Image (cartoon, rainbow, N blue to C red; front, side, top):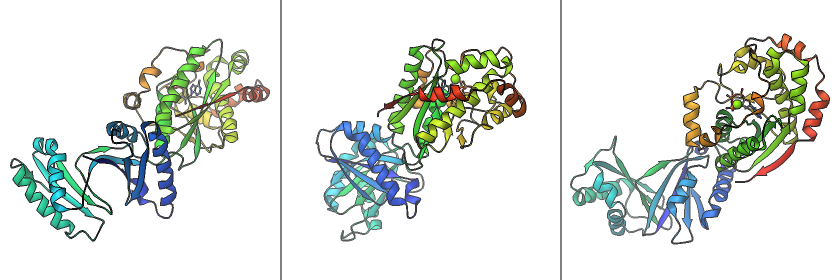
Length: 390
Ligand code: ATP
Ligand code: MG
């Protein structure tokens, strides 16, 4: 039986005049994601994209799995393509949904008649098909409020489509519809999750990573690139900026009081990230911070970091527990890479007793002991960019 895939969008459907722009972007993102799986035809109608494979043998389950990673898609289902004739629709439903209906206890029928030339109206289709299904599968009961299975019949221009099983999409908005932001990505568990969460709101991600060789190894950098590769499955292509940070970290160590090392380092990271963000047309920074998780994530410490930021800093994990963050990192499959034991530059020269409640003033005084501006300039000049492709 010929099948088609329906991708339903949620939030975009509520957009007013901009709806077309969102839809165009969503289709473009879907096409890019499905390209390796074959050739498909795309038709959009009533908050749904109808995706039909040109190839009879295409693996539609694989297509569904891929679609489930595309932000902007709220739900996905596979549907049988039937002729627009009520008898044929009925026999198509028996055949296509036999297993599903055999194992269900309750159901209802929903009909959508987009082609008004079809002789039966929607309530009539529901009544008639519902009755036939009760005869054919006598164990079934109708439950219009909370059915296990909703058999949906859509009468469209060229065909009728029948489906019953929906899987959840990734939700959110199409990547790129909200502009671009720079993710500060480490090798840890948190920052990749933060990137994923902002991409879900339609933000196109670029990434910046700070390395301090020889204190951090080549392997640590590769690990971060692998994390970004995983993220491309959700976020699309990522421009990856790798900043040499050794000289700056050594200067902090040699010139600033130890208890302030981490905060000063984080402020310098933010300054560099902002400059790279400007160059790359990013309008905000993203970090994986969460209140209270470590000394540099107390409110006072965050205030000290924020004091150097002139662009918005998004911290989508700020109110989340580690267990919640881990659950998402498992879902997006970054967890196993994140837990590989390679050092991050944050763990180089960590103070034994970091100040957990610094004031902006004392941090500024401590940082002013040394003029970092030339080193910042040099680090940016020596930054390497690599496009990590979907
Ligand atoms: P993560 O799990 O993301 O490493 P964390 O809980 O270990 O976070 P920190 O090490 O204090 O926390 O880092 C806080 C945030 O700073 C990270 O989430 C990330 O956004 C950024 N960050 C840390 N190290 C780096 C790095 N080497 N390069 C770029 N950004 C970094
Ligand atoms: Mg970390």
